[in-house]
Image (cartoon, rainbow, N blue to C red; front, side):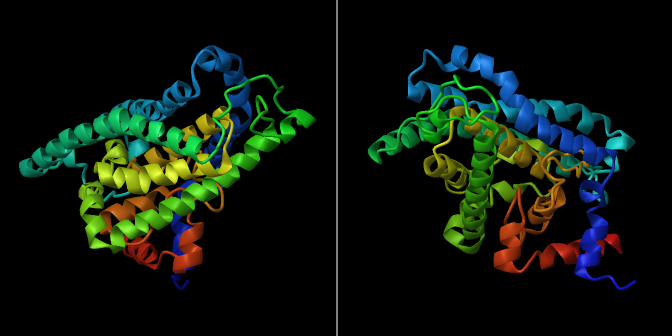
Length: 329
């Protein structure tokens, strides 16, 4: 059989794209996020946000981002520490040892120094920069005449009535609105990320900030938020704020989208190609090891959660396909 890029990709996608019991688990997680999470969260929404001003409510909502980062990183610690064969079979760079277990002392020392830098960068970005950006976003929205985000929770789940025709004045959104908003926000964000990420690589005066993120040649969960603050603003924050300003979603939809986007971002950098990942099983999803390739080779795969813009605007990931072929050989 001749190994074409298409054949190589089909063979290599077996972990995250091949139908299996793990794919069923991934789909189940995605369906729970989409249909069950609204039911679970809705009763608590007014108690959390009811007494807060719109600005304070958005600040509280923004802490979804560091919460997912911390929880995901802590959850991965036993996996990294134990290195059980069950998990190691899904490691992306199987030919390389984890840097904290490398036989070379300088490599281990370099890794721990990088980890300390990561904790400094991520702490500043998540707990100082994000609140500043949320305040700037709220003031910008007010100047543009965009109403504050809705935090109401007074419409039954799954219903679409005349009251929901004006989305901004409505309470809790129905499923059709949730699905529509999630699709549109994801498409907007992915294009913003793809465009800004590619510019960070193309222009040297921008890459000098983005190269900090590429200090990780082998990803682990901490790498997800290892960004210079300038890079964080341009390639993370602005693409993340655009969907909110354009689509003006209900606060729960924003919370739900934050969860999905953060899990996808963590999955990009986890270093494992888990077949039960809820953000990788569907046709347009980019694979975990596409971003791993991007870190290790610093070329191509500028998208993240989706590879649709890579296909439309770059004609695919030829560098990635060649990398996969070499590893398989």
